[in-house]
Length: 267
Length: 324
Image (cartoon, rainbow over all chains, first blue to last red; front, side, top):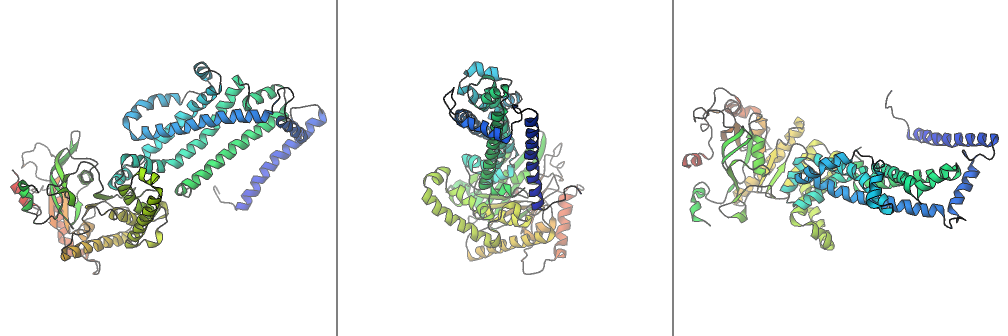
């Protein structure tokens, strides 16, 4: 039957099984590749991966720095600044658009258009306008995530029922309190969901830009090492990206559960 | 205060008028909804507002809440600090409480927080809550205690920390009532409050309202100001007669041709009479008000024959004839 529930222990076993299958499959492929060509680097064995990863945290002989450290600092900083700007900007703009009709009429048309332009395609525009420094990446992420996040907040505010609005006024709320103490509280969990969903696109934009014009960062390193088919470096980098995205997501979910207990238990 | 306002004193020897509607008319574009609605609500009265669907009950209620001021005419409230002239209703304010059928509670607050949010919004502001943190914490504790007491009063003492989605419909409406009552408003407005509830819960809540009515009566007998004045909009005639001590019928079916209108200028009050007072200790006898029910049905709900608009209006008759 569709949607018949299973025991949680069964679900856990199935989950572990699929991950084990993935790892086992890789081990098998790597071993076969090694037997046919011991100097191959496309499907490195676990020991090669370990060596590759170690090389990224040792001081590199030629460049004189630790790759992983400089890449993580550069990429993390760009991502954090871009996302932080997008979070603050979209929250303020979305609330203002949802609450005040002139703001809505002014910003809605350009935002709905901009939301459809892929920032990666508009890379040259950011390049021309803000140069190739860190500013470019930050601006690109900012404008990449802003439209969709703003629209999410705006639509959530629009959904806020009139009845509750009137009720807040009959309870003596000021306009600012209605926006901040009432509407924002109600919109917050949806906003956190929007932030969660925009981490993926933000990483896509950033890595793509770093691949094209970067001289440091995860995208830059992955492109360079891919060209040399140095997969023992590329795979650990991919794994780190996955781990980063996953932990950011879990962190935000935890935040959502802490800040909005009423929302989590509803689903 | 103002000696020229003696027209108000001829009907109100004391300051016992809570709300006055004078010639209230409203419409949306070319569509006329309300026409010349005149109403005077005394303190402690429980007024049931009935009428056919689309007659403008909700429009009148919104005008009283203040979210949609009327196109013509005026609504005045008479809170203690406004003097004999009263104050004109043109926006929602803390002196009118409202309970809707749906969306009556803030989903992100527990029952207790939902009740305590009124005092919080009314008596403090964001700056105070952020900057005077310690004083706010002490005040908050008092307000939460008051909210707990209010929830006890509506018999929800053991549901304090439930969120609205964890409560039944009846519990939610009880919390919504407590939320309005804790503000001690001049008038509590109920917009089809029990429309979505099952019959048993509905009767429970009706009896709760009768309990509040009892309190108001006792206060008047003692010579105090009655704590509750209430307008309930309902489409259920039994509920209207049972809960209210006065039933007002708003209807678009009145004899407007006699008043030389080319088309119906909107719904107006065609019925305004007292209703018998019930108490919760005696069993409710629906047959006891069958005659009044039939009268209301005939005057308010039947298109034919259209009644004269003044014939069944007992309250405020002096005002209608004295108007220039």
